[in-house]
Image (tube, rainbow, N blue to C red):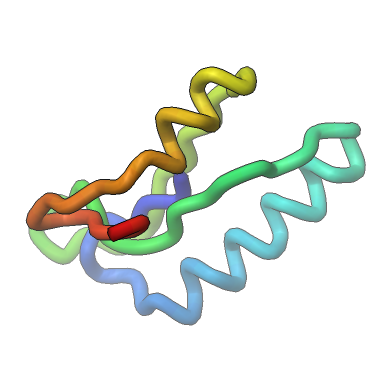
Length: 76
């Protein structure tokens, strides 16, 4: 999850994500799922935070389950 703090444009978050993925792949880490956007913000603060999780098949199955909340929607 690459989370914007509220003041960083979406295009910059995706540029940062591209750099992070390249570094992870160079280290032998495969990214299976991702979220890029403003999910947890701080009054239009510039910058971003990165959260990584080691996921097994069970976590990926749960991740892929349908979601319908105010902040996320998929699989419906």
